[in-house]
Length: 181
Ligand SMILES: [Zn+2]
Ligand SMILES: [Zn+2]
Image 1 (spheres, rainbow, N blue to C red):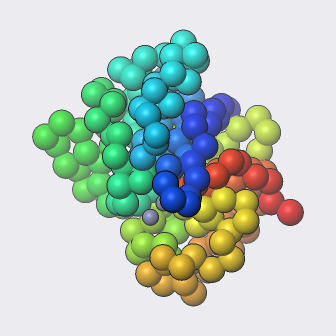
Image 2: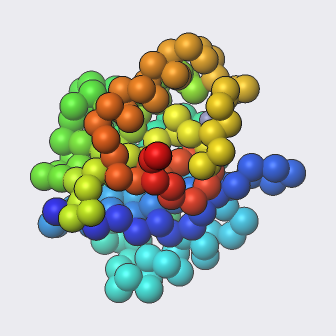
């Protein structure tokens, strides 16, 4: 079973920051969406508080390719990087489809298009149930309709597919974790 640690909670407004999360699953240490933050110490200090260094991070997941979710990727020199269609490390680009791809025993990826056509959700089996890390929601308030979605109807379909997995917790793109209900 994996454990999930939100490193910093994102927000949207005059300024924008992404929610950055770390997952530990056996020998895998995964950071999801190392994007824009007011100061990169907001990512690094919580990692150190967990007794880890940036070099310990084995995997980074990009929910999609917007800078608010990717800007600080270079903090993790040892990681392999995952998006919807490939794994990248140093000068290697290995094609693979993210849908159903298992990063580790308890962490897998799922295509959830809508905000962009290339969005993926990270699904984590924990002792407290399934956790879904996803940009299908910006925060607990939605928004009900994503004004920036390239395909709003597809986004709603993707939300229903994620909710159909009965996650106990959703970690949205720009806010604090929230329970479904
Ligand atoms: Zn985006
Ligand atoms: Zn975003």
